[in-house]
Length: 438
Image (cartoon, rainbow, N blue to C red):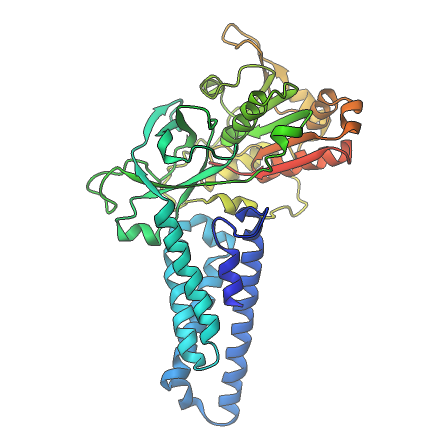
């Protein structure tokens, strides 16, 4: 099953009409099955050796390689569990990648003849991924512009992306591929907030431990970065066939929402509305910088009592696919409690309306209109009532005609809530969720 595990982990997915984010969950669960099968295999052989008084045979060369392989697989399985992976992602990755190679090679030697073909496919997939990354990556410098203390724009030369790239796609950034440490360190996904017709590539970035310009004295050397992509995540048909589109974003998920918003507008689809749920009003200038200036509702939620930066000293590094977890246990918590928990883990833009009833949300959502308000942008205090927003935006006639979309981007709670209200409103509405946070 190892070739299947590695195949499902490929970026981008070689499967037609399939984004690699769609195969991530399957990759994880098939991997867990492989670890379980390996554990059962090891336990049964251990019992066999004990019952037949052959314990010394465990330490013979080929058998002992199997013991080592089993322990590596267990290490991969345990460190991939969410509590460890989310808090120590860098170390998980640095363990994960070398152990995958060792598991394939040592497992082949341990099994002896009979697995050569499977081993060939495993090695071919691993080498193919390296070749693809080298051949598609470009080395460049990134220019940064601060919006707030932990939100900034990153600008890259247009040449790092192909002449055309799918709107709403993302790229992955790492330190220079010339440094060996880069190959055992995670890449970092960022949604491309600009349009293919723009003269530069713009990203909306939350401050994290990953720095675009590391110190020359750091283990990664120069300030240049390696950029690979683009990687698609939304069906292009929305930009050509949609009639009405409501975009709901949370925090730095605005990067995806703004890209979709502009893509629709450029394609002549005018019935588009963007809802942005954000913690601080000081971040509103991001809308202008991303070219979003009409039919926008901003909901400012304020900050939790614990004000902790994403650059805190816990070893936390998050990948895009890590936000594809199912965390709902049916337990309702206050939205600010969730926000506080999220900041403790290093999230700096976690916003969720899923735990508020319509009455609670309506009570806390009040208009904040002042001289700084931009034309075409309404600003409110509190969290939106998504059911009301959806009902007010869509007309029954347009929904019945088909090709009316709700697009949500942000934390899992927000995306799940938007999906729930969309399905409740009408089965004819098309929903796309991007569970993503910077």
